[in-house]
Image 1: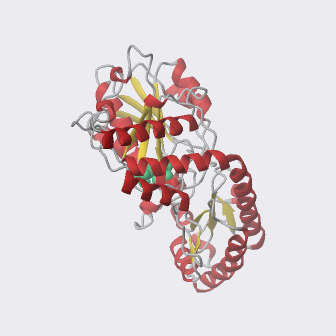
Image 2: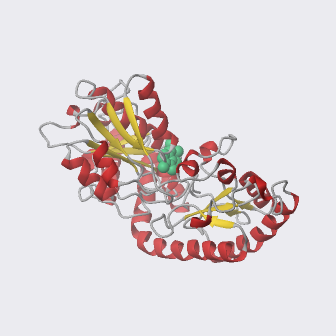
Image 3: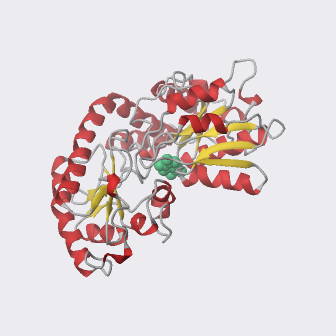
Length: 410
Ligand SMILES: *Cc1c(COP(=O)(O)O)cnc(C)c1O
């Protein structure tokens, strides 16, 4: 499962596989090696496992199993949704609405479409990371072909009002995609009740394998089908009803399915347990360490996400010092942690660049224990104190900061 001594608190970047998932995958790599499209019995066995898996996974979000299309990742699912809808609807319009806090897997396809002549509106968010529903509705025009909004943010954990967004999209007859990679398996999702047309998810964020994801594509009325509003990006041999050709990774999908089964069975209990640990961390850090604040929404947030701001020091130093104590955390999103640019999400919620640099993301998971949380809470204040002592920005040299800037986060 994981290195028994290392305290892994970076579950938003990726999760360790559940031992039951590993067992399931190993079994099917050995036994179910056939091509699910082959006519012979070995292929048919893989095909049957694939369809059974599709059904189980669909049930987690109240979808029809035939509307689940497997991809290699959440990123691929986001690209397929956004580029696929844009290319198919060019005649109808060229306007896309998204937000300023999307994962790069949505942000960058949108920027690529902008370069190709599409008009993209990046909706701003408030200090908690929430979009304004009225502003969304006012932004929709005749040319709008797609709304793509993240379900729950990977950096600050804020959960967007997805059901309300879905209702607005439906009212104006605009296709609605949501990147639900962080929410899938952690929050209840109902694609019908929420009027979601397209939804991306990924196995490795829910204790499943890396290299497998999915796109839910609503079959808009059986007669029309998806062919009316989205087109594939790859062309090959017929798999996934031509929407995403290439030999289907059935053993990985079996692992994804096992991860979904476990997530479904434990969701309610785990959410409650993780919220308890999450709030314990927030309360302890804000209560015991000076000049600290919470990024993101205080309650409308993922059960496993904590994003903290520390004045006068850099998130990178905190991450490296915690790692030396055997604790794994992150400064923001995994994809940007190697670049020195401040996180676009933290800037979008109103932080100044120097404040954004002082942020730490702690993401707990199903394998996080109370003892591990205590160990983290014991080590963190010592690290912050030491870093502040040696920091050129430390307290006493306050001219670098506007002291009032972050008061509203406390
Ligand atoms: C991790 C993540 C992705 C990318 O998923 P991959 O399977 O790693 O490509 C996309 N969106 C969000 C919100 C994520 O957290």
